[in-house]
Image 1 (cartoon, rainbow, N blue to C red):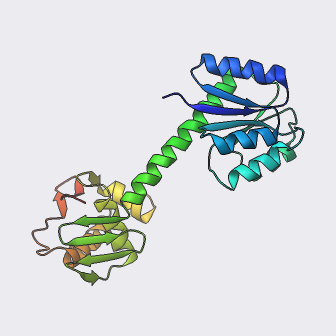
Image 2 (image 1 turned 135 degrees about the horizontal axis):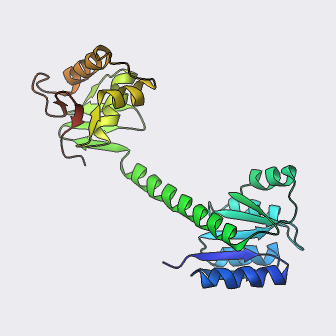
Length: 235
């Protein structure tokens, strides 16, 4: 997949150098000489990342970033000769994702571009998965992650916060085995010192609420000497 980059800079020497380098690296680069032109290009084309200078005529970089952020979460990397902490904070505070000071090495620029695109792609995938998995259905159970509610056979089940956290952990990772040490670390946010009682009690209470036969569970399975796992086909 060829990633599209919008390069907004009023210095023709820098713009030409960066464009040539990035195109050799496989990117498609569109250029603009000021914020006004850059904004127009942004509104007409979809980009994976925007490289932008701060000090430009007609419409400066900060104002351009603010207008872009009103419509898009596209990664934005500031390139600027102004390298004070105030300028960095100002630029990032208005919605830029990263900052690189001129003069910069092309290798560093490439690394920052790839990292920004990678982060953006990863977050998009995670958001899409989260949106699809906000409600987990397994058998007669319906688990609404956002609203912290659980229905069994269309009847609401009252769970404590720890019981819901355990249920969410298991149901969100079907067939994955969790050791008691992992469970304690993830749910109680503390180091595990071998005290199994607190985990066992919460698992037992949770089973009593969600299982038809708590002594013969079909959802939360015990792997003796190892831990627990969620067994079932989620929808």
